Image 1 (cartoon, rainbow, N blue to C red):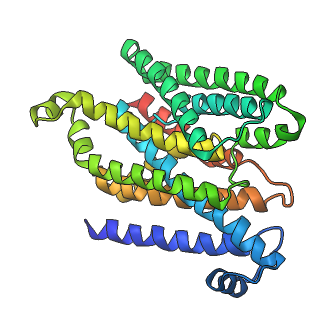
Image 2: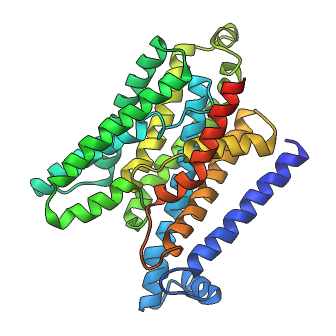
Image 3: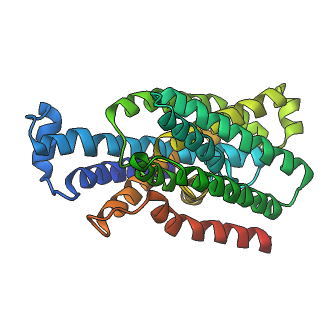
Length: 333
């Protein structure tokens, strides 16, 4: 690893620490950093401030970091799969497919008074992600123009979002608010039980991506080159899309669809690190995605407090211009 990469990894870690501290301190009720750290390390005293720090802010911070990292990593794996830097779970409609199936499951569970577990949410989101992914792959085989592929992905997103809104309109009054908030993307309702559920899934996805890094490096040179090195390209493609779908589905199941993180963060990482080595990009994208979502979640909570914006509103403001610039560069190329 070059000196530049080492320094940039250090900057990422320092930025994450700063953002975690600011997120702990800032909110509808400001808590001094010394008091917040004292509560975290002592376990709290059972008062209101302890509840705010331990049961609301801390799981939310962990969720923003882990799910943001998972989303950025999912985007990088999709970009490696399609050999295109504009591919991402939100733009290609994969997140919308997961959102649709999870929304259907939530409405059915409410209607029939079923207890919905976190695992069932992940499975439902994974099913929706894979359905959308299969459709995108089929389109990609017929259409080799990435612009048309993106338009198809956007149309999938619109269709899934329209059906989701229709489903939400028939949800019971007591749950429609939470369901609507989730469908826009938010870390606000994350609990410790949910953290304990998605933590191992995200870590498994990260470890799997690290193990796939050598294969990705060969795969980026072309399928024929990878095949000449003895790789089973078909199995590798399935693993690549499977890990990517698992990560994006996990994010959607717990935080709803979050826009543009999967495209913007890997692009920023490649531009700043000046390397295409998959192992470096995987680790840096995960840390960068976590930092990006911590920053965006802070703005979502703070800008118009006590009114809270959806996380996708903030990520779109920063991510959409990057997607536009990428498409313009490809057009010029």
